[in-house]
Length: 390
Image 1 (cartoon, rainbow, N blue to C red):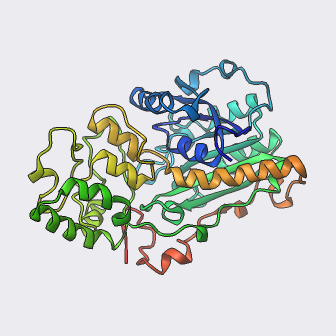
Image 2: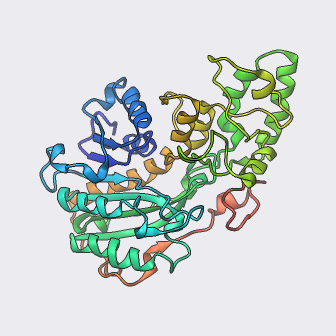
Image 3: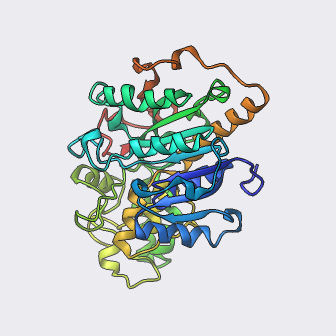
């Protein structure tokens, strides 16, 4: 089912540069609106949405979500199929203070107010794994605020699960906590995507074409490409870190991440200019630590399609990429949501008994990498900044 034929509609909040939107579009959802506050990200969304016929009818709405009036969407309660969003991660990130609901950036209450107003058939909320682990830190907030609010709005919690991006064809370690809730006639049909259906994609596989183009056909370039390729074949990348406007320029993350990138033949101490811009080969390609990635290449590591463009200067564009939700993961979950919606329309399902009441973390699952991935990687425990290198 193509997106142009889809009868399943979606609205996305905190849309960023469109990672989740791209994935859900690929799954078969027709976006009615993408809501985002960041100026550069809004320009990125407009640049892509307005140039693609199969995104026709999708509005990009620049707005502070806390001030947004959902009446502007002109949707009747229950009309929308999916409300999705990646609410801000800093309140729950292990890299921050983990203030949770006490952090002014926590938008779960705002997201839940939109759920109450729109009454979509399905809800999908994405965040960092820190929201679920350690299990007890935010348990009261998960159980007695988020989960209870959804149950009171007559939703069934289908699960709150950490999905590892490299299990779904993304050449990067990027664990994300995904919450799926659905109206009860659909919820019994929802199943999580199976990691076994996807193959491991290495950094070399993702970047080989663009690296060949950057190095060119000179003897020096061919030798440098061969050296890089041999290292990049070893595994998947560490988690890309987008950072914030308050902290420095663009690089590929903290020291552990940079060391992991070095093992993959990449210099993580900066981001290279694109080929059509002023470039410094000695700095961007032939430094002692290897080539730096361009924004385009970072986007491929994040799982964006090659034709998705990013607005803004290099640092602003890289931050959009680094903070994005990998499209293939969103697509995998989105397809399962559509399958559940289709099945529920034909055969409404009763709610599953283990989803009826808050009070148990049985639905919060933090899996190890899939067996297919574990056969090719070294187990690094909880160090998700380090690349998986076999």
